[in-house]
Every structure is written in structure tokens, then in C-alpha cells.
Image (tube, rainbow, N blue to C red; front, top):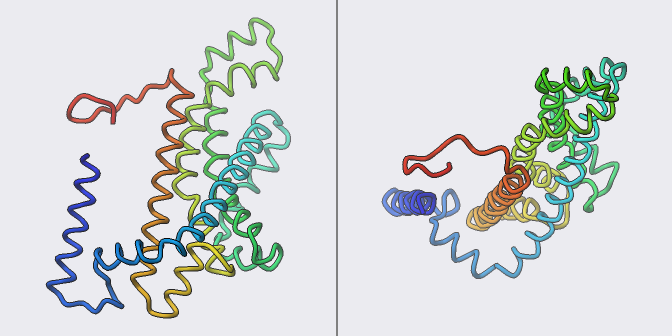
Amino acid sequence: MRALLAALGLLLGWEAYVRLSGVPPFLLPSPWRVGVVLVERWDILWGHALTTLTEIVLGMLIGSLAGMAVALLLAAWRGGRRWLLPLLIASQAIPVFAIAPLLVLWLGFGLASKVAMASIIIFFPVATAFYDGLRRTEPGWLDLAATMGASRFAVLWRIRVPAALPGLASGLRVAAAVAPIGAVVGEWVGASAGLGYVMLQANGRSQTDMMFAALAILAGMAMALWFITDKALRAMLPWQPDQLSDDSGGKA
């Protein structure tokens, strides 16, 4: 309810500013005008939204699996860690926006280049968060496992991985928040469908209300994806309670 009231307050302030300042609609449309476009052009926006949502979900799935696999490889292979970890860090020095034209050139204007772009953006936060959790396992647990003669695989799978799940959860939450960026950037570079494509076309026609409508749908999808991911992770990690509380004493 607090979030809804805050959003309503922002919309009312936005509406009041547009009406009182007299700013032209092609520069800043009112929320009412954006809502009208959402209703009238919903049939068009819905199809493009499904395309972008597919790219986001597939990118998050592939990027998360790749990030977890690399983190496990770094934790299990001590020799390869010296070679792969610097490459992993150096790869982030390349702006992902600069890679988008190459991905479109290599993979085409279809779904593959957008999924690849989203996967690249998601990969790093998942890999680093999971790897950081794997290397920060409680030393007492590792000493106990060594005393009991546990193998390296058993230590990794039965001790390090469960202990690193909260860190992985943090990485997945970050991935859910940034997942739409890759898909939209890929659509801006070259696409024939998707919300990024709609925004690009609307910008060329100075249809700012259409741009805001597509942006509102994109923001709604990103928020829904984050909350779904957060709820699923809380259900999967019941032993990791949230220690932060709001003013009423409930969980934040």
C-alpha cells in the first residue's frame, strides 16, 4: 500500500507539473495521456512486450546458469582459477553496449542476439556473487570436513555450495533487476519487434507518449520479475531470514 501511495503521489505531481507548466506533449506527456495510449494501443504493445519478456527470461536463465557454472569451476579448479579469474574481471572492462552491434552482426536481428546481450549482462553479477559465497565458507565447517576425511567434491557440494546460496540469491536479485537492460539495448541496435523497437520507432516519430507507455510496461515487467525472483529465493532459503524490519515490526 505504501508503494502504491508513493507511486500515486509521483503521478499526481507529474500530472500537476505538466498542466501548470504548459510543457509541450512531445517533450513530456502527462500520465493521463500515457494511460490513454496504453489502453488504445494495448494490442500492439502486448505483442512487443511478449517478445521482450521472452528475451529477458531466456537471457536470465542462460546467464544465471553460465554464471553459476563458472563460479563452481573457479572454486573447484585451483589451477584454472589463476587464468580464468583475471579474464572474468577484464571482460567487464569492455562496455556491454559496444558489444551489441557485434552480436547483431554475428547472430542476426532475431531473438538470439537479444538473449545473448541479456545473458552477458546477467552473467557477471551471478558469477561474482556465487564465487564470493563459495570462497567465504565458515572455516570451522571446512576443518570439520577435513577431520572427517571428506573429499574435495564432497566439501564443495555439501558444504561450500549450501553456504554460498545466500550470496547466489543476492546475485540473482541483481540479475533480475538488470536483465531488461540487455534485451532493450539489443533491440535498439537492431530488431523488428520488442519494446525497445517500439521506443525507437516512436522516438523517430516524436511520439513521446508511446515511448513512455512502452517504458511503463518495461518497468512493470522488471519489477514483477524482481519480486517473483525474490519470493522464490525466500521460499528456497527459509534458513536465511531477513533481519531488516520496517517501522511496524514486520519484515522489510
